[in-house]
Image (tube, rainbow, N blue to C red; front, side, top):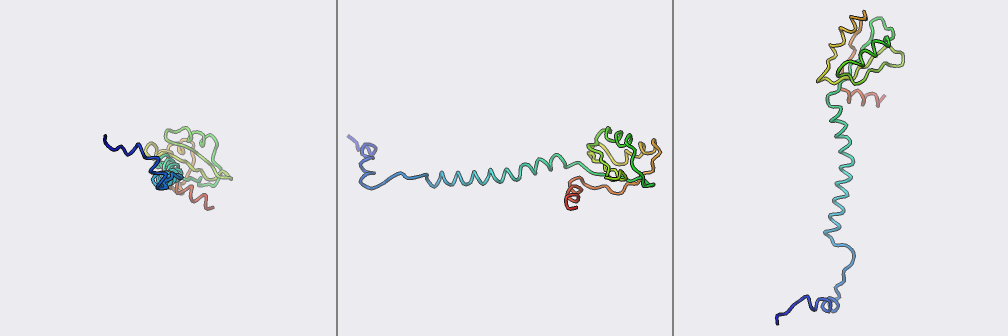
Length: 139
């Protein structure tokens, strides 16, 4: 009859003083590394999604030459253009910020609308949307 080590395992462990305590090093390593990966993912994934959604957005800032406020109907008509995500005027209504998708819309496409409404507008700045938002947060 061959020797079977499993038969006397409990006696051997009792004599040698082998006791199973806690979790093994391998399990601990897996738990710690998965916590690190989950934390890293929680930080990076939302920023990546936000960048992916805003990667093609630009802001164009316009002002009327006479310095007056923008007519509400023109602002609403600009908001209905294809590719325009948002139109916002500042507190006094003198500056108009158009947020648009540069793959669909271009800032030059608004000049016919301005000419149709006999508005003399000046393009003050054309800037990447995320850069504009960072600048607004600093102010």
